[in-house]
Image (cartoon, rainbow, N blue to C red):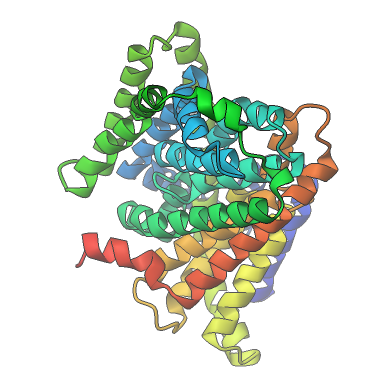
Length: 445
């Protein structure tokens, strides 16, 4: 059997095994180990061992538990409460203002934890009850929270970009900076959509009444503005030393974790229960991601040994005669289709060993192509979080929602936001400078 058919057999076997519902990293690792032993004998166990050593020696991976811990401390200690109340009094008099404030809340939360789940937890416990109580349309509300929380995997410190950096052997700092402008652009697109929709259909997002607005004094607004500044202080304490070159990524993540704990202590909300829950969740998430990266590296090592990337490149370019941009578009379409059934980490493990080396070899006319493609991949993951039938955020939203919000409402709520995300993805493909301008300014070499 030729190596091309062996690679195809590995890939198809992996997809079939997904139907069993077992852990993704276990399935990927199993296929990689069996294929390596069948092809190269007992000496091939060194491939997995070398992948594990590469993982253990990758210093930036230490940022992962720090940022996950930050997110869970903020969620469990409810540090975002004051921030949301600030958005409430400042944006409440505008139609759809609380929904806009929820998007802004998600941007700030995303800038401090790097995960979608933390934003979902905070938005569902703080924003969802308040929005429903004030008469916001339930589909509008659930769509806002799901779309806003997905920004957590694009705006730095994105954990998904850390995983991509490990597989693509790309610098994490440049990837994080590349996600800043696209993340803010997408948040702005969400805000514009919400503002225009509620302007023409005020019943979807009613403004607070004039009587209630009159009871909010200027002194109260200023007090809440000061109280809501804590997350900004945490973000500045973490990112400014890194951007100015005073600290490394790992050191900045430690500063962020310590500053978050200090903020919770200062607010009197850092209890033993908060520490225990945040630590347990951090350990579980970090171990899960490390197993996933290990499986991806092992699978990629076998694929490299088979020359599968060259075979795929030859198939697309030499046999189908596709142009580089056609190949890139079809890769993104395949991501969108897989996202209906798989989560972001599963897609990264399955497809990254194939797509990342292929993108590096395509003549797309884009400098720092792996940095740019990392942002494209992450936006596609955001869309995957929201696409039925198995989008990750859809089921999280159902778990957090009250009984009156049905699964059908949740499915319908994401449609306009998915269209906005696709628009952002197309804009980034047409104008790569949106992602590359900031990292090239900070890292001109």
